[in-house]
Length: 68
Image (tube, rainbow, N blue to C red):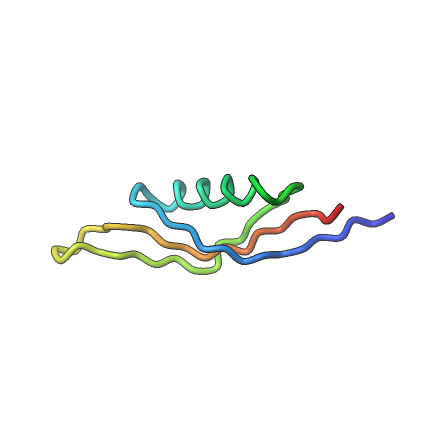
């Protein structure tokens, strides 16, 4: 039998950086969705301080998992 995959879209954010936003988003999804197989970051945004420093990284991801 062939595997069937499903894709969901999530938003994640971090004040530490892009990698942290990705990792924390995936760890949160993994608490309720099993068989994660990968993710695609489709959009990256930043919130800035008035002086231009990055305050928060925000991203949109499409997460793929295999349906049991």
